[in-house]
Image 1: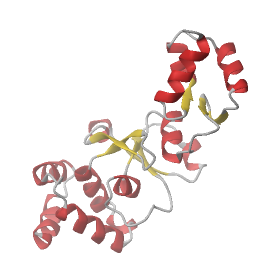
Image 2: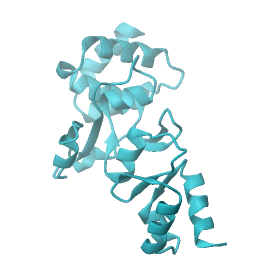
Image 3: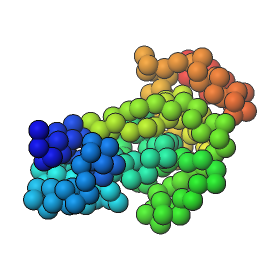
Length: 197
């Protein structure tokens, strides 16, 4: 198998995307990658991330590929879980406290920073609407986050998310209350869920 065949397979497996890190992990050099990108008319969409000319750009996936420490959260996670009526105006991500996120904020991304002990709580893999896998918080963690930041979230978004979550056959109320306890919002969460049940 030639070097270009290896890269063709990576692009196919990556839904049109190719990352420098994958290329190097498969024993292909950077000069070969540069030659491949040029000959295949690939577009550089982020540092170390290339997109095939016939592939659909996926903004969330591109952001994730170039920032592996982000976790999609809040309204963006609601949207990914189908708990929001329309795409959010801004992308919302969560990172560990201390992470320098100025490059993300400069792109207009809403960044939340949390302590290490809750950063990974409720992380799951989910597909974007274009079928690419990204890391986001599960429905229960997202509902908790929305309740924690309720003052900065549109009341209609919150109400719709709660209604859709409570109607979902994927919901896990035990997880929801466990997370609520971790975030010290157990009483408020119990009030909302009892009204909805």
